[in-house]
Length: 297
Image (cartoon, rainbow, N blue to C red):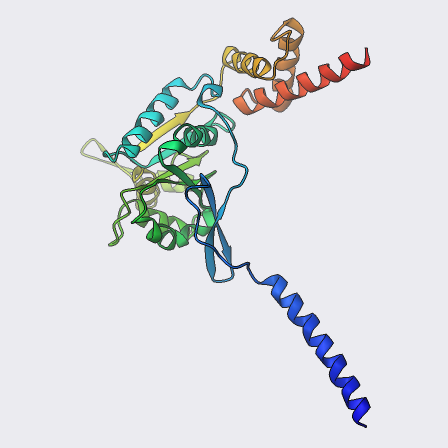
């Protein structure tokens, strides 16, 4: 009986160890304090009821010089960031407009430009905006300057996250740290969906336009960003200039010759867009495809 009991105990112990090994694999790794000196960018990651800052080990090395035909937006954003780094008054920023026109690229390029001056970036997903108080609390005493970055920001009508964002921007009893600036990109200027009925609730009172309550609520969110930067679709000339820039950066010897220009326009027509992103994608395809054909010749 004893040998049989020992065999059962050994088998049970093995099963328990297997179960524990599987459970450990589901648990988060031991969380370490962010290394602000080694890493420039971080992402807020949630696990169960907790969150932590995960370093971005391979950030996008985009340069400001690579962003073509958005000089006004670059200059305005650059000035605001320099004010921020110099601990002078500055504004939270909403970059809105057409897709692929350089909104998120501008933020990444500015990080690369000013990281050696103490600029750091923390990317926060829209669904994690409720964690904003927990994210910014440890930043109060830090010497670095932090950009809280939310890409492709938009909300559904009943999304509770936008109220957390409003409180962070202006409206909470807790003051936001002076070393934190919030930058959001969006295709929508007002971040929330707008419906025909809501605009029909607007009224003219003594010659002044008064929006309905629903529209006022939606406008109030975007108005809490002190700086709005609009990005519009590129003209054909702008698009071709960006293609030429990327062909040069990719060291294509023929640059934007007649054949490349013709194919670039066809590429944009197929994609239904003339944007910086489409120009970059075409340049990569063209240089790669032509280089492969030259090898076979």
